[in-house]
Image (cartoon, rainbow, N blue to C red; front, side, top):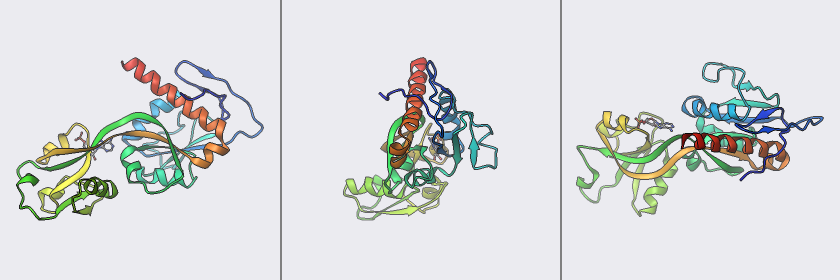
Length: 245
Ligand code: AMP
């Protein structure tokens, strides 16, 4: 898949393979942007298998730029929605971000070389179990509450359905209960949040997991170091999947 290359950023180990270190006079620095919480918790074991361990606890440290066991690799801790922005603009070389966020991102400048298979869930349409949309008077425009404005627009446009999108930043599940919206578009994992709020999932929009993204200029200018990181993380993903099988 990815060519295993000498890593220019320090000493690193994949699950089975020690990646040789090519000492350069000035190895390129690399920054990897990711968000706290679920994505960070599930990305850390993969980063660790790639030889990249933060020197501080990302979830508790107040620092936003964290040193790692690889001298030249720093982690940037930012909001999930900002990860593609930082990477697209070259403020970070690489990033780890959910497909849901990538679907909403409107910018350019990113490669998406690797599905890390973490923070898996589904982007779904849900409605009140006691007030199905199918029983609403026809001709009325549906109101959809979501933080995934673009993705929701695309979903309904593809069905030729005109809807009103109500942008929210959280607690989407509340919107149908208080009459703010008819449906929501949100992430569903176990389904227990929907059930706790009297909602049922009715349409599947996309499967979601976190992906490694790379700034296009970094891929050119820091090619060996960036492809080494991609290779190490690909090894870590393969090894995790092999042992889980
Ligand atoms: P659940 O009750 O397990 O279906 O989880 C649903 C809640 O967790 C919703 O509020 C989602 O926005 C959030 N959630 C589920 N999976 C993820 C994920 N992979 N990344 C971010 N938020 C998620």
